[in-house]
Image (cartoon, rainbow, N blue to C red; front, top):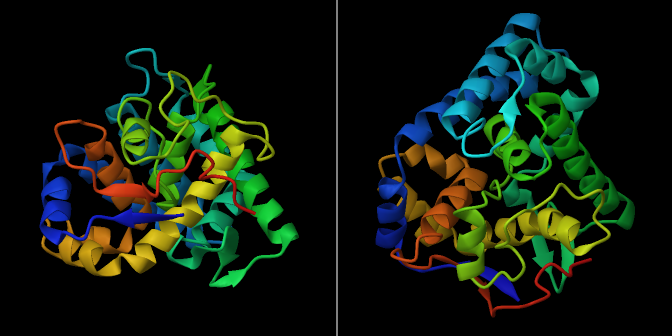
Length: 266
């Protein structure tokens, strides 16, 4: 089982260009500040405040506080959370293993091309889920679902798609990923059960796809209105799956073959 992108650069370009361009501005702004934040061992108060303001504004533009989505905490609360060493360290760790470093070989998850030790994988799983829970609690009021904490992680680190309930998860379902398109996707406590496994295994499958399908992806992105996305694999899959969530659009990202247990990786 693997994940593939359709070998058609023109359709990839078309999907990128059809994605609402106003959603791109906030993303690139947050990532520009986020890179500086992640590069600092102890980010300055001014840098943290800039990132907090940009992330909060973009999350609001992306629907936080609307249509039943969780309310945003204040800019000050955002700054306090992003200043916290544990949260900063967790985000740095995620940024240190971008999708191109993640692969799958015979259902074994690999880091930097080599099968990872159980301890390293357990640490990866724990870090990803714990930072989602921390951001869900510290940035939002009454948040229980994965969607907006994942959006926050995407904005800061570019790590992986955010499992948006209306479009990205529908896109995954259309691509053959079972068990993704449901009304609620609650924040899992750990990676021992299906919902936790789906979040922690998906990055490895997408990382493998980014490497094996590099030609159509890079050609399609280079010809798009946003060629800077060539360095943003997590965001690229976020966009392609979002567009795929509309049945009027072609299926570009597929689980091949469709597998009910696609997330059952070591």
